Amino acid sequence: MALLELPGPFDFELTTERFRAFGHDLANRWVDGAVHRVVGTRELRIEAAPGGAEVEPLDDETRTVALALLGAAFDLDAFYAWAQDDPVLRGLIEQLAGFRPPLAPDPFESLVTSITAQQVSLFSAFAIRNRLIERFGRQVGQAYAFPTAERLREASHDELTALGFSGRKAEYVLGLAQEPIDLRELASLPDEEVKQRLVSIRGIGEWTAEWFLARHLARPRAWPVGDVALEKAVAAFYPDAGDLRTARARFEPFQNLSAHYLLTGQRCSHATPFSGRAGSARGPV
Image (cartoon, rainbow, N blue to C red; front, side, top):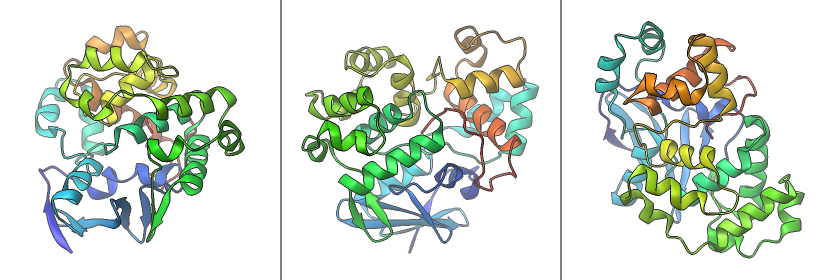
């Protein structure tokens, strides 16, 4: 295995916690202390190593995926320096030092996953997501490739509802698979234009668009207004903060990292730290 160096601070266990917190994730499968994911026709394996992570295979194709899964895009040094004036975040940083929120490498997968999580617990969302992956994905080694838009164009409404999707969500996923928008081109657009284009797609609202900015594009100011888990976390840590729209300005310009640290800190406060047991609130998938 080759060493993939990562900017410090970096904690592999904290960063990969979400891949086991809500049950198995067939697309990002945790097996024997390593994350397995399908990249093209190959299985990618990522495990802890001093100074970063050991990755097999490591080349131009797999490097981008591994860096996304390990949250390399985030500037933790700047966030930590900014957060020193906030007692809550300062405490969370001490507890979660080196936590880099993992990113969803594929834009279509990111949106389908968020649609799956709309108005349900993350345990339910992961179960439905896994059934979708197993039915329409492709297994390579320990992991499964998330089904492509092309593959889901062949799926029927009844097939998706049989997997646990509501009738409306099945329509949304099938509609998204038919969308002519090039989702990869969104990376070159500013936040507001990304959101405008996404919410024009049936089934995608502000919450899903914000999580796309947060968990696929790593945009610093992404802040998922309407997220139940984030509302609970903000209320618990900042009783006087008001609703999420009001609280947003409090975390300028690090809304994305603040949201992830608040959510992870709140979740782990209700479980044995990083044991894979968590509350069933809705949050980022």
